[in-house]
Length: 395
Image 1 (cartoon, rainbow, N blue to C red):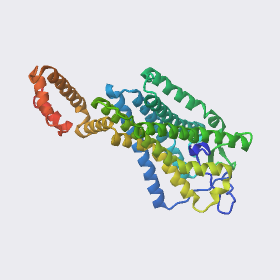
Image 2 (image 1 turned 180 degrees about the horizontal axis):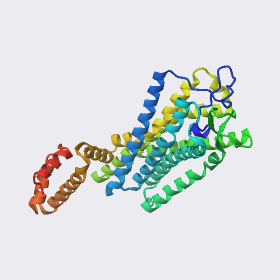
Image 3 (image 1 turned 60 degrees about the vertical axis):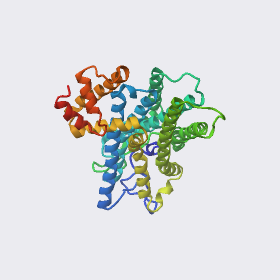
Image 4 (image 1 turned 60 degrees about the horizontal axis):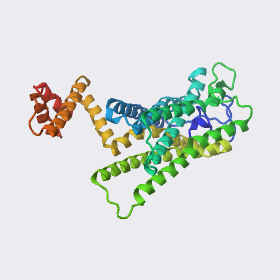
């Protein structure tokens, strides 16, 4: 699934005439681009890093900040967000800097196996977490009478995913080294998997990674969500009447499934081109002799890496709770971080007042709650407006 499954830091490009410069390892050639194109590419990768780290960090904050958001489903979403953050930190900067800016590995001997290893780990985390979410939804919808996954069990599943994801790529860390192909102080170093005994062993291992990271998860996701979609949208029990509560629950489940199917589709589309290129290139390196393949590879790599920034936008677009959470966070930055806790406390008072009103009728129990009720009557006001009202004497 990952470019790092087949090559660690530099794009495996042969030169146009099939020969290689004396200071480059076989299969590598510099990615030469106009300055303006490099600037555009660097900007595009930088956008991915900023949005992926920022957006997924907010997702984690939203889930752990609000008790109502601490559900089994959202814990899996947090695990997925953490894997995307890991990818944004360890996959994107090192790979595009080595390929686009330096054209060699400038980060030293220690970081070579560490970065390469974490790159593969992050991809396993994403694919395995998506599979876990699909299986959880599959059991909940196809077998509704079975016991649902508890939070404790969810944590065990998530911990298992992380352990397995860190164990499988150990051979990548063991075989990756930073190496110079010319014994001079000025010769560039390249980070590669060079300690395999045979090329056949390396090819077999990369094939196993490709199957475990992309093919197998994709098949499971297609089967589970295909079956879920058929049950939820295609099958209707004749004469079955649903209460309004059941209808709301059914609609809520449909929205969640739509959201996760969107996540999976975007995931599959983003990774497909790069996986095809890397899989063919692992079998026959001559594919990199094709004119313009360096730009095709870089575009495919950018598309694959961009996957880690889309999920927060999908959650915000298709889930009202996450959307409200993002609005709260952005309102804190807009109005000032210092007053953020005051606004959250005011919102708590408004909810409490609503509950008291429903239990005790329209008579307010105290001036404090009556005031918060008056302030909450205008739902279109921003949190900044509520803060201003509170400062004028809400409490």
